[in-house]
Length: 439
Image (cartoon, rainbow, N blue to C red; front, side):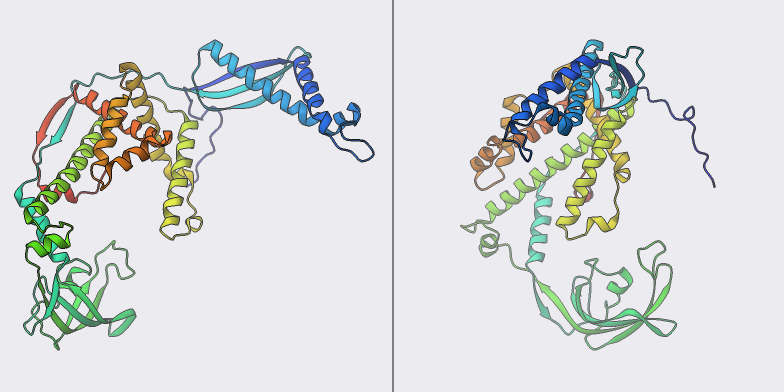
């Protein structure tokens, strides 16, 4: 399908775009350019002349165009700043300059095009609802964590019985399609735990009921849409079990506690540390869930134009961050051919949210106080072995403190919103909530 090229009249109107005509006296530019030439003249070197003795006529020939351009650029910047200040405009991003016609030959004329920040009218939030998740850490959650820690430290003992859920099996298998072995379809002496979810379920569950030395043939249909060249196809598997092992879990005793960092082996201390760790993680998840709801609500409740220049800048920053993350993981980001356009939607959301938060903070004086920042850092530092070192590290750098201030400001905005909306509570399953991808 062909898409017709838009004419200027068809282009969407940007309500934030503004333009100003700037007129600059030629005499001012000439005067400034002359000053610049005089400043650099003593440093100009030319064969046949002593340093600093090059005639001004020759200096002007060499550097006249450069100093003129610099003088014009400085005059445009000054004139633009004076004009927007006089008009009371808040400029978003950079401005673009285009030459313009002037009726006066003694004046240089330019058109400055730019965007301004939107005027945001804060909405009434009283009819909106936020659901606060009601969860707490109980003995059951501590017990489950202890059980997971025991399984992580399990030893394996070979058995002669048939394999069952939770056992570790060592197998070999070959995959065929229509009787022909598929590429990379042969696996030798592969060990895995039944139920751990490391293989497709039909393959992982196949050894259940089999003893070491037994072979089994079965078919597996790969799900449609799966990231596999066999998606939607059926393959025949021939699997042989070589070894069956059952787990032996350590007891929850003093040795186990010492292995997990409790020096005196006190199991009660171990349970208390597990509980404290779970409570910290739960609080982080609950706060993040609440913050996401509040921010989504704010975005849904407010409609306003967003400066394209800010979106472009944010998309560029997201792109650079993604490239750094990929490089840290060993990928060549350049081969993926990522572009800022890929991040435009997220960038637009971030800019809208940032403008909203800024407006709320300004109108309701929700900036982070030094006391709030200090309390936040101290609470975070309490999780570390040497809390004071963490506190000192943040206070030693203004940029680090700024990152904490930004988080505290967001928390202030969340609290401000919660005081203005209906807040209901809902109870959810602890494991399901904690298993959700962090927001």
